Each structure stands twice: as C-alpha cells, then as structure tokens.
Image (cartoon, rainbow, N blue to C red):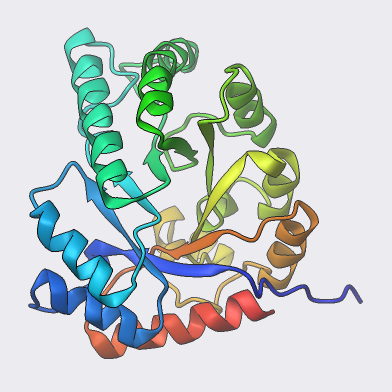
Length: 273
C-alpha cells in the first residue's frame, strides 16, 4: 500500500465570497485569522476600499496570496465579439494592478469558453492572442497569471494545458489547478504529473462520481470535503512528487462562522493525509 504524503508546508486560504457573515472588512479578516486560515482570495476588480483591505490584512496577518478575475465569465477572453474580448483584457489588467496593491502574487484567469458561438479551435487561437496581450502587463506589474481548469469545455487534457503554457516564454504564466473540477473527465494525479512545476496554486473542492452518475454532473459537487471520491492522499503524493508546497485554497459553498470552522477542519485533514 502506498504511503501517505502530507503537505505540512501548505498554506491554506479560502475565497472572500464564502464568508456569509454581516461583518466589516476588518472583522471578516479577523474571523479568517480566528479560524486558522493563512490567507484569503478576493475577486478583482471589486468595489472594496483598498485602504481598508490593506489595513485589515496588516492588522491580522492574513495574507492575500491571489485574486480571482471577476470578469472572465461575463466577458470571456475567447468571445466572438472583439469588444467583449477587449473588455476582458481591460478588466484583467485592472485585476493585475489590484493584486499588486494587495501584495498578491497571482491572478486567476479562466482562459476561455467553448460554446455554440465559439469553436474549440477559435477559442484556442483567441486565448493565445489574449494571453499574449496580457503577459507584458503581468511582467511589468509583477503579478503572475494562473490559468484555471473549469467546466468551460476547453483545455480538457492536461497535456494540452501544459502545451498552452509552454507556448509562452514567460515565468509569469502558469496554472491554478482545481482538483475537484477534473474529476468529471480525468484523474487529478494525471493532471498534477503533466502540469508539474507549471502549477502555481491549488483549488480544493470535493466531487462524488456516484452522485454525478445518479443525479447529473453538477450534483457531484454536492458533497462535503472528504466525503466524495477524490483520493486526497494520492493528490498529496502527486503534489509532493512535483515539489509543490504552496497555497491551497478551498472553494466550496460558504456560510457562517460555524460552517467555515467545519470547512477548515476538513481542509486540515485533507492536507495532512
């Protein structure tokens, strides 16, 4: 039986939208610190006063390791309308600048969407074009672009994802690997092996293949951390094999303090396997 390989060096974070308490910015940061999280990721652009966010960060010691692009779904980088693609580029540059102001190192970007308006080949070409436009800004600002695998019918193979990243000669481009998102069509360990050092960040969510098969794909996410079909010990072994010891961010439905405390306990168990 293979030995487990915990990730003792991993730093844990969650998403800002998961905090469903009516609190000030400062009190939300204090809640995060009380729960034992090391960091928080915010959407960007956003309307939060930057000075308040920075004051809360500094007062609590809760880091902001990255931001999540707030525009890449509504205005995809691969949309057939050039004006929509331009809006995505502009919002992404703004997100990179806000990430820098927060002291963040990464900005999560969904590289594109394939649908009835955008073919796979067209999406790939437009994604390459858009990333090529964005990378000079990322390099100048000093924040990396981390592409994420989501249910966008695009970049469905880890080899293809690695090929896309390798097509750019820039250390400011990498991958934000979402463990749960690949369960519908692949194995997390295969993605981790193929992406290797290209992985800049890890997103954690659970997935149940049993519920997917019985009730439909989206129902697969309706399971608590540690109670689905992801082999977290194998995920940890795979991450250890590529030398990953960075941030691990949980991305699941949020709630109040009690619910978030339960999520933190479950996350701690997962990274310790």
